[in-house]
Image (cartoon, rainbow over all chains, first blue to last red; front, side, top):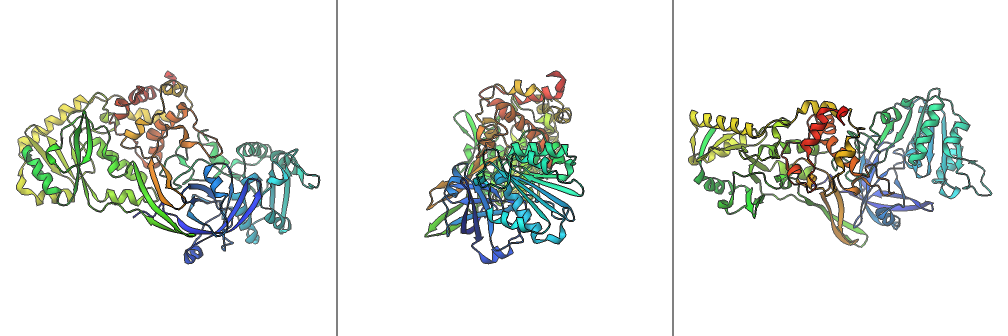
Length: 277
Length: 343
């Protein structure tokens, strides 16, 4: 009997509009015992099903320290995500996971953490940010730089307000030039530019970055100029996935399967991969 | 355990076997040889030149259901797929196709054990036969195989002309031979000698075409070679190579049905198709034939070694014999053997 590809039933509890094209789906596994026992680490991903439409791969954007619900944030980009956006409270979905590796939460202990996120790329970072805030004494200073195309495209407004007030935590928000509103009090400029402007110290620091590929590319270039080691830059890679468990054969970059060896990699590891992603 | 079965007794042996197993065997369909579920054992063609498809599909079907779903109100009932219960015997599998199954085992057992595959796998008896009719496209001897050594099967046949020379290989295979010992006679020294002579003769029919060690050594420094532009240009992305390959395992997962009821299925897919790696946002890391063909070759002769300690090619030659555009894997590997400097 197959169980590997058979999802658990999950019930949508809340749908949060994050931006004009992104929603967060907050859900619970239908089997209460299973939901209670379900565990994962920040950075892991899942397969999210709409029965009759198919499965899509999303990171779990909530933290395992907040177990009441699981969150997946979904940007509308294709057929399945369009259907997902029609889901409402009470709808039943399918859930498989967690899959993949995770952010090195133990290795990060005692380090100053610099989060650099762009757009919906904040989703995997949010899981880790919530995690380190909930275990605040284990980690050093937190700097969060988050940007989006426009003010309306900034996700997780509720979290941003909390992070702003979190102890020993700096939150810097920026929008691309032209994306500001008259009331906008944050920065204006692309994420990599603002990163160099705020120039966080590389001493005892690790950077965790995620966003559009172009942002990651220029962020890494900026970090290298600032003297960060490739080993201290952590990001997540995205490739098309179907099975999530290393069988269907499409998410490889060289012999590395993003679904199994990843999705979390250091820039030092990424530099060793064939440039085919 | 070496035995002799007279050819006229094959039917009786298969009849005995069919009491416990569904018999899957090569039969002639028009000009083609295909593995089929057989009930009329006179139709079985044990000595044949390459079946059009390998019998891979009896362990990993081209399309299979993963589960059914059905909504009643807001709740959904999910019914996982069940694998057919009756054991199968794949009879007359060539050594190349048998070795391919061992290669597939590694992938389907990689950390997450694919139950659908292994339920069938563990419920399938493999009866191999020495391939004494290799064709021009065969190159098993170049990829560390032979036309007679079917590692991992339960019983092995060799056609010696009037009789089959039979070796019991696994415990299960030996037991089956034991249970039917009235059909066999003990093999004699001259039978064994005859088989050795046949082996030698067919080895000569499948000359080594390249040095696989050299090929795999050269792979790591050939990724960025211009070679790929040149050799991939003929490819028409039909995917025939992947669909006929006994070791290709890539698949897609989709829903068939509507929002009320239906099923989730997985079907073979191919790295030669443009949509294979195309992401929802439109980005495609392997968007042309060059990157896709390179992926195919690297997957088989580099990535698979790194993950599973074996190449993922058994030299069956189907991808060469059946490619409508005349792509030739052996020629590609010969170019790689020479190294990037010959590009």
